[in-house]
Length: 153
Image (tube, rainbow, N blue to C red):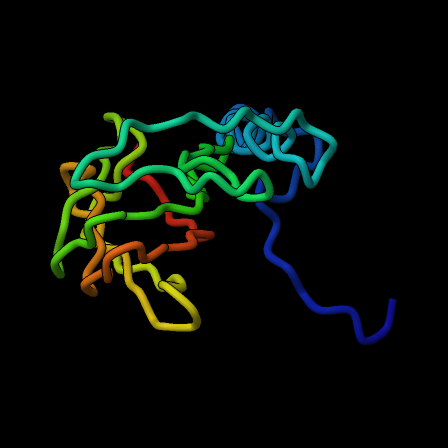
C-alpha cells in the first residue's frame, strides 16, 4: 500500500517464526485482569470500608452524609469519603484515622477538601497511613472528604 509506514518486523522475515519471544500476553494479562475488575468495564464496585476515628472526630449525624471510610479499587486507587465533625474543635495537624497496610501511599500526599462552611481544609496522609487535618477545625466544625490517591500496593 503506497504511503504505509515501514515498521520493523518483530519476528524477522519469517512470519511463521515462533512467538515465544513476544510474550506480550504474559505481560499484559495481569493488567487486563485488573482493568476488567474496575467499574468502567462493568466490574463489581468494591465495598466502602469504615475506619475508626480519633482526635475527637466523629461521623456527622446528618443522614445524607457518608460515614468516613475508604474504598480500594483494582488499580490501587484508594478513595476516601466522609463527613466528620469535631465537637470540641481540633488544632492544626491533628491525626484522626489510620489506613491499613496495602492502602497507604508510597509518599506523603496532600488532598484538598472542604471544612466548616466553605473554608479550605487539607488532609495529609503519611507513608504510615496516618490521616491528619492540616487546618485547625473550630468547635463543632466539620470536614467533608471526597478524595483519592494511588496506594503503594
